[in-house]
Image (cartoon, rainbow, N blue to C red; front, side, top):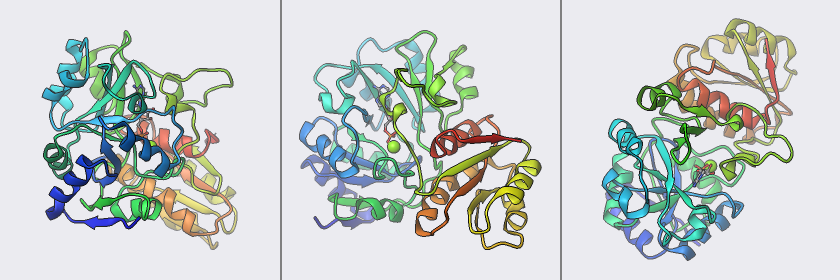
Length: 340
Ligand code: AMP
Ligand code: MG
C-alpha cells in the first residue's frame, strides 16, 4: 500500500478516506493517532493489524465536541459534563458506559468506552468533515514509543496505512489522561496532559490506579487492558534514575557505560557526556516539565537509530505533568528504577 502524505490543506481527502473505511494518521495535541471510522468494525480491525496491537487493548473514540457524548454513551454522570466543560477540547479521555451498537472491536468487548475531544484544530476539522467518531490509538507499532511528529509515525506506518496528515509536532507530547468515571471515586488509569491535581480540583477525590506507578504482579488484573503490556520501550534496556536532579545526574555520570545512551535535563548534558562517547539527549530544562513531555518519546525513539547497549534516564518528580513523564519512562524501563 502506498501511504499518501497529506498537508493541512488536504483535510477533505483525509475525511473521505476515513468515511471509506481507510486508515489515516492524524495529528493531535498529545501524540499522532492511527484513526479509522469508529463505527466500521472492519476498518477498526485493520488498526490492530497495522500496529500489531493485541485485540484486547481497546481504542479511544475521538469526537469533535462534547455534544456527541450522548450518541455513544449511556448513564453519563454529571461529573463528565463538568470535566468536559473544563478540559475539552483537550488531552483528557473519559471512560463511560457505552451504547451497545459501538463495535466490540473498538472497546475490546468491554461495556465501557473511552471518549476524547482533541484540541488540535486540524484533527477536529477532519473528524467534523468525516462526520464519524474516529477510533484511534497512538500511531506507533505496538510496544514502541508513541510518535510526536509525522516523520516518527511514518517510520512505523509507511506502507501500512492509507494516509497521514502532517499537522506539525505535537504540543503536549504524551498521551491523554484517562479518567474512569464508572467507579466511585473516579480513578486515574493513565496520567497525561491534564494533571491529577487538575482532575482533583474538579472531582474532589480521585484514586490512582496502582498500574500507574508500579509493575502489575503476576495474576493481578489491570483495569485498563492496555496496562499489562510492555510499552514505550526502545530496543536497549532503560534504567530510570529519580531524585534530586543534581544527584541523579551525578549517579548517571558515575554509573553509565562508556558507550551507553543517556536522557537528561539540559543542565546536565555536559556532565553526563564528560570524557566518554555516550549518546546524550536532552529532555528539556529541569524546571520545565511541559518541554520535557514534548521530548520524552522522540528521545526514546531516537536511540533505536543507534547501537547503545543501555539507556539511562533522568526523571522529573511526580507533580503536575511530571507524573505522566515518569509513568512513560518507568514503563519504558519495565519499572527498573534507581532512587538516589
Ligand atoms: P493508546 O492511546 O495507544 O494507549 O490506546 C488507547 C488507550 O486507552 C489504551 O491504553 C486503552 O487501554 C485505553 N482504553 C480505551 N478504552 C478503554 C476502556 N473502555 N477502559 C479502559 N481503558 C481504555
Ligand atoms: Mg499507545
